[in-house]
Amino acid sequence: MGPPLLLSPFTGYDGVEQTKVGRNQIVARIKFRRRESRMMQTSVILAAVALILLAPLSAASFGGDRITGRAFASRSEVIARHAMVATSQPLATQVAIDILKKGGTAVDAAIAANACLGLMEPTGSGIGGDLFAIVWDAKSQKLHGLNASGRSPYALTLQYFKDHGFERIPPLGPLPISVPGCVDGWFALHKKFGKLPMRDVLAPAIRYASEGFPLSELIAFYWASGGRKLKDQPNFASTYLPGGDAPKKGEIFKNPDLANTLTAIANRGRDAFYRGELTSIMASFCEREGCFLRKKDFADHSSTWVEPVSTNYRGYDVWELPPNGQGIAALQILNLIEKFDLSAMGHNSAEYLHTLIEAKKIAYEDRARFYADMTFAEVPLKALVSKAYAAQRRSLFDRDRASNEFDPGDPQLSHGDTIYLTVADDERNMVSLIQSNYRGFGSGLVPDGLGFVFQDRGELFSLDPHHPNVYAPHKRPFHTIIPAFVTRNGTPWLSFGVMGGDMQPQGHVQILCNLIDFGMNLQEAGDAARFHHVGSSEPTGSKMTDGGSVALESGITMEAKRGLRQKGHRVNVDSGGFGGFQGILYDPERNVYIGASESRKDGQASGY
Image 1 (tube, rainbow, N blue to C red):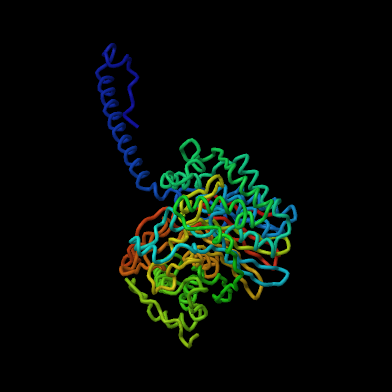
Image 2: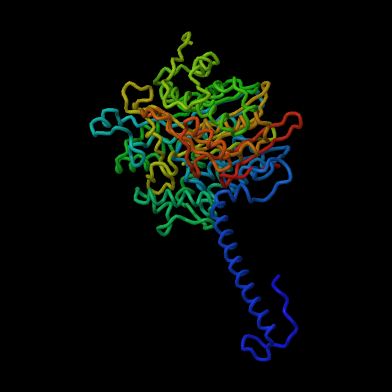
């Protein structure tokens, strides 16, 4: 407080009836107020600077406080007795729940959700792309794997790329397009595990396509980004940019062309797409636009039932699909790290992160060298996922220093921007399903009047004639999308996936370590901060020589970042490249499902 004023009469600064003492006290008071004002201004400026500096930490440091669980978790797990669904879009989740309540199986609900996501999240999925799935069948107590990825055109040859001076297959346009495998994958799954008629399964997606749906926030962001890049591709703008602009969050988007396409598929089956009127439209469009797909490519396509591959990690059997996908990279990483006491290192400590990053680098050299379509290449599958091979490769590991490069191993030994969803039903069937166009919207080419984009998976072939993944006609390219499943003591424990290109095996491992090594619950395991290492050698032919770089989310401490730099890692900041997790865990003791959908996506887990 300032000096007290005397009770002498005064009227203000004009001096009327002021005493000398009163004037002196007024002057003192004015000086005090000026000093106080300057101090307040300084405080406001310092507070503003502090807010600016702390802004990147606001989500982690100034969010709401949870009274239970770990502070970084965005919400509680969802727990239900009868069924559970987790997808990357809440409307799709609700559609799957409705299908289950009508008596549909987990596979029926998964197909219904996938069809909706192709409409609602075309930035990552659609019937112009491919599909993989792992299904737990409660009746046979067995896992079944489906590879529903498409093949390259018969008419396009390796010589074509050489004759036209290509060093690698371009990411957009007509050349990277391969046969869409999604629709055939739906019908293969439905034939084996479905119950409701396909008309009923696809009806919700058809209705939403006709009536429209409001865009959710993150999908709207990626829609605008993809639209800017692809607006000049054939039919793209007329389908996905109504009025010339990408629809914004909350705006209603309709796709009547896709509604008609899905109706044809619902009424006339998979042959409407691969041997019927839709085939003729797609083949004519491809011929006009310089894509090499023709009717024979569609007619000869089929999905393949495959045996999932597993390794045991600390008592849990982790299952992935064999190549042409990259799923076994997760198994290789788990084999490499199982001899380390990760829990003693501390979650997301520099030592822990270094261990996983180096293991990823080692495994990805084999991914770059050996993973390919097993119909065309001899992939040493059993050796790659063996414990003996992991022990051999673990000798390359340096606990103190980041490595700049590794060579692929000799696994012969003794000759020895995707969507993910998971559904579990009342009969204890579970499905882990992943589906993608690749590169967000895919190639950008929309066949006339059909309402979907062709994928660009063919980009992931190598043009090296000596590489197992070299381009060849009617061959499946290397694939990044991978569903995962975990069993324990022969019973289902976890159906899960992590979206995002080469992030996926890294994400699978981080989720499992969070659950198994650090005792997190399912929601916490998905919400926890992640790393994403990039720059490894690739199946397209590129070679890592500088160790790549690692992006860390803001929830990882500065101490851990410094520790990684001291070990020689190149650490950078990224936003949005850390994947998107959904998972369903089955608790056999309580006979309940636990579901989670992480905060990085628009998704939702729901059950009943």
